Image (cartoon, rainbow, N blue to C red; front, side, top):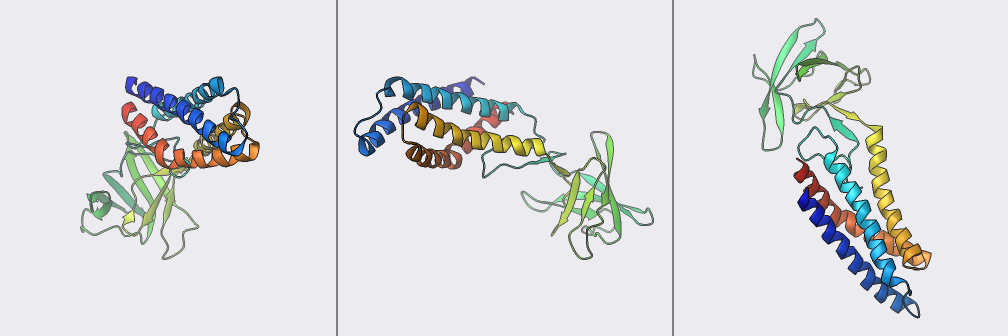
Length: 243
């Protein structure tokens, strides 16, 4: 984690310089003179923002994630509240028909990123006709997913187990990777992103003494730039180090 601490130190120093120079420029342009407390306010604001980013990055890096590269607490435009049971689609699964007949399907790689399942007996792609349930084995435990009643004829199917894990079908058949919606993860993602925005507003308004309207506009612009350009790289790097 040493490299992550070094990165955060550089980011904090960069924030201090950005806030100091930016405040001198914008307040010199919009107001008669810059705020007198800039000597201590800019470093304080940089440390506060750097500390928050450190908390976010270490929380994201140390939180468990099933898939390689999965970032539990990500930026607003990349966040996902869904958690996957497996790192990649299971190697094999069983389609259970109405008469309790089971058909074994095995996973085959379709291209670099996508998989598809084929009937090991007939070597045919996934066929959901008459399938009432799907069974998989993960970490030595058997999971049974029952077809949801809301699935209509001709539509993509959804299979759900008693704990809420869902497996869906698409153009290339069944996904083979059960997922579940986590409300806590969704709320945590919202918290980190909106707290980041709110923190920029607070330091610009209360510490650097921008008018609240200017502080809000600048905070949103800086937050958007960080969210789109810098935070994704920082979170990816933190997650890579943790992995």
